[in-house]
Image (tube, rainbow, N blue to C red; front, side, top):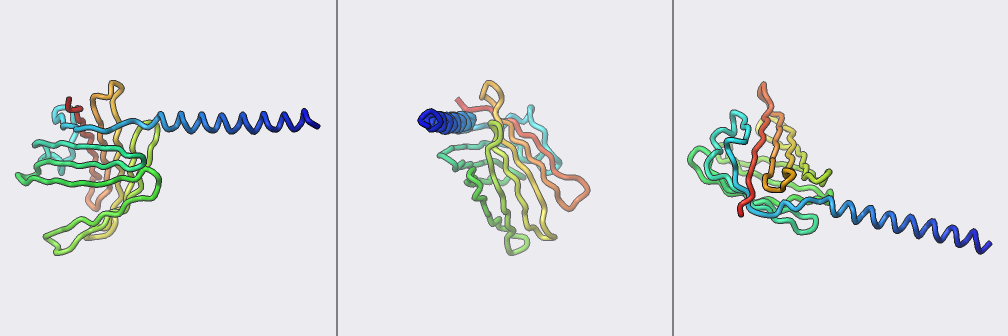
Length: 172
């Protein structure tokens, strides 16, 4: 009887230890995106909508546990835009209101963000003037960790979805 009990203890302890090691390994997989990132226009692929975002595009990212804070700063059509958002990687999701001066109102974006194999992946639905659109963003680093690749795809109401790949270099 003692041998059977001992065997159970060993098996359960082993399972607990392997689960703990697996969770630690999973935590190690999370890539640190923290830093200031500067757009490299010549390495980037823009949609027709994004061609005017070339000027002075920077992204500052800080990671604190399951929260990723992203501050963007760029010029579009000769107007400076600064945005800040917090993405939650624990599945709670995010909701943002975007002001739309032309419509004297705003639209809403509901998103979910997660870690996946060293990447940050965000999917969303966005209520706009004519209904809902869906989108996806992916943040990943190159193997040398010196470039951040930001991919955006969004299905809108026009004939072509938006598809962009912006490449940023880490500021030293």
